[in-house]
Length: 408
Image 1 (cartoon, rainbow, N blue to C red):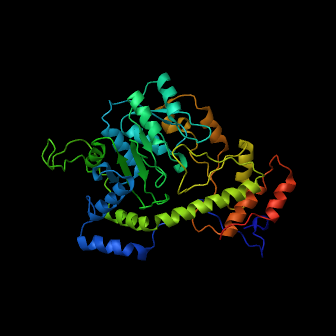
Image 2 (cartoon, helix red, strand yellow):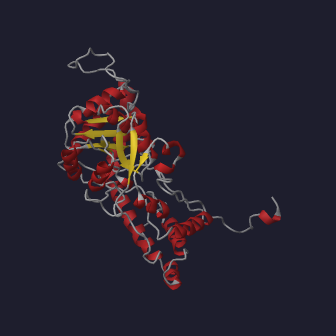
């Protein structure tokens, strides 16, 4: 190492602040469930822990047990739900341009064509009104709205949309467990139980649907498509359709059951952390940050991300550079937009998406995780305060010197 590149002696380099930190049950909390699994010698293929987890979910969602099924992950859940709808091959499926790639890849792997639509400027989600206008300009066979960053949808509004258009609606509710409910409506929800979500099973997914027979067919397709129902039209053990292996294992169900026992407490902690950070960062930015608005489906109960909108792409770049200097991890969520990804743009149809493009230019994910220390939060706030906002500099200096109190 040359002198020009040597690290100065006596200077403590700050520890990096991660973007996300998974919060899963400790080994001793898993042990009772793992002992049950081992005693039963049942490790996969819809074992007793999977069945118990599904029964618990059915009670929570106030649906019959047959209207709930677990899967290996939410992406496969979306893919199998689309397959179970029995749409004509190559059907056009409407989804938001502003979403994670898995929403689009599930459509493609189910043999259909993604049609990318815009999102609402306040909630950052595809709404029934946007979907109706999109369908009028380019007819589609189904709609896959996304609960963006976990924000829940109004299921009664989507139920009315289904009744008016005849189009099936499948909510990609990957990050919305505990926030997204049917609310006395009808519909189909697909949740992620990934390790970064509020209800982790390390890997896993959950499908809840009021559509008759849908979850039963998804369950069958998740077991290669083999019929396990004695009352079906084909013998038990016969291949009823071309499925895949997408079953949840007993190990992942054990993690899910243990996570359920601490979910409510963790959800409250997440909500409190979000409120503290939003208040603090609003002060540090001179109130120049914009936050996602509540959808009409109710508030976000267990946030897993912190993603403000900056006034401009230039200011976002400033904050990114400052965070890089301070070893604070940030991320441009859902970017590039789906239509700009080389592997997707030739396989999708894109409608005009001006709001999605504005969001893509100005959103930035900041660190957010349970156990985040006061020192880590203040480092993030100080980085935000260093941005050259349009507000007078004195306001920002005051924020750094006298930060808003944060919970430990």
